Structures are given as structure tokens and as C-alpha cells.
Image 1 (tube, rainbow, N blue to C red):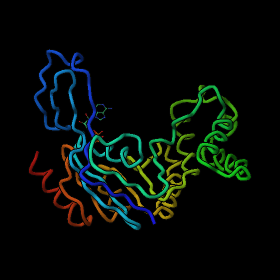
Image 2: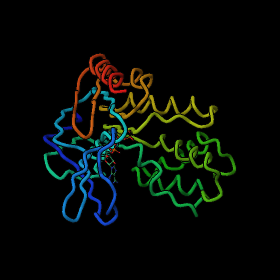
Image 3: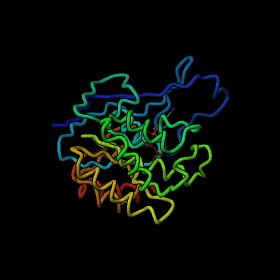
Length: 249
Ligand SMILES: Nc1ncnc2c1ncn2[C@@H]1O[C@H](COP(=O)(O)OP(=O)(O)OP(=O)(O)O)[C@@H](O)[C@H]1O
């Protein structure tokens, strides 16, 4: 059983005030509320959010720029802490945004692949097989044996995307559906992502794409300026969100 329970959770980012001295801090139409303290500015990224997710929940997160989607994902992945409220996460969490972390540019694709296997708890007896899988999926050929520092941007992203092969988690956290820059890779990445979702117990996916959301989620969290506007079945919440967006323009 996997579960995510948030009770009255608030998360803020703090900025030293000197950085913004003399600037006008009037709110625009995007982003969280900015609270001005004596020495710090507080960006109230999530305010008093309460949610319960359980096995079988495939949840999309929508909201305008700066509404708190990534912050909510980071909170559930343990990458940011709550200032107040209660956060309970039951289950092994895999976060897509962490895929490329810990890579070392002086090491080859093969060496990085083996390191990632260790970080992601692949059993020792399976490492060699997984590394060969990554070589095949990435399509990097002999570049797999060269240091990451010699890769082009697209080659690096091929390598990082191939690491999806290693992800195992009961709670899957995705900050966008990955679309490969190179269309020849799309089918493989799509199928890796769909297998991951099928294996996971809870999916949290932030996306601005209605197509992606309709394909993968059954519930929607709608955030606006750090507060939870709505949480419920995709059919209800997406419609309300779209009407709200239209009237907002
Ligand atoms: N590292 C940070 N330091 C300071 N403020 C931050 C930081 N990360 C996010 N914020 C602020 O927190 C608020 C929520 O940002 P977040 O990235 O969670 O929004 P989002 O909904 O994912 O946005 P987008 O759709 O634009 O990616 C925004 O006002 C943003 O400016």
C-alpha cells in the first residue's frame, strides 16, 4: 500500500531582501504571493494544502506558471521541507527530476550507468545486464564508452532518458511527460514511461498538456498561487480549470 497524506502543509522559499532592494514587488498575474519581512522576502509557494492519495491514484497537477506544481512534487519527493503542517509519505518514491543528478562528466556513459545502478539499488547481479540495456536504449553506440563531457546536449539527454529503465518506485513523480528531441527515441521513451506508470501505485504528473493528462491521469490537483483550488476526477476539475483559464485571459 502506498499513500501520500498532506495536512495543512505550507512551503515557502526565502530570499535575502538586499537582492531586491529598490525593486517594485507588486504581484503580476503569475507566481506565489511574496511576503515582505524585515530581512527576508518570503515566497509562499504552497499554502495550507491538504490532500490524501492512495493506491490507484493517477494524478495530474495543473495551474498557471508559478502556482506551486514543482514545489508540490519536490515536497512529495522529500526534496523540499514543509514549514508547517504534516507530510506523510508511505512507499518508495521515484522522482523523474532526480534522474540526471549525481552524473559525473569525467566518467564514461558506461561508468555513470553502473554508478546510477548502485544509487538506484539495482541488485549487484543485475548491474551488467542493466548497463547493456542502457547502452541499447540510449543508442549512443561507442559514445557510451566516452566521457559524458564529450556528449552533445542531445546525446546527454539520450543518456539521461535511458536511465528511466532503472526507475522503480511505488510512487512515481514526473515533472513533465518526457518527449525525446530526436523522434527516433520517442517510441522507446514512451513505452518505458508507460511501463513505469503501470507498475507504480501512485502517479503524480505535472503537465500543461491536456493530451498527456487525458492519456495518463484519472484525477487532477489544481493549484493557484500556492493554494489548492480543486482536487477530484479529471472530468470535473479539468473542465473547471479550462473555463477559469479562458475567463482569465
Ligand atoms: N528555488 C526557489 N527559490 C525561490 N523561489 C522559488 C524557488 N522555486 C520556486 N520558487 C517560487 O515558488 C513559486 C512556485 O514555483 P513552482 O516552481 O513550484 O511553480 P510551478 O507551478 O511548477 O511553475 P511552472 O509551471 O512555471 O513551472 C513561484 O512563485 C516561484 O517563483
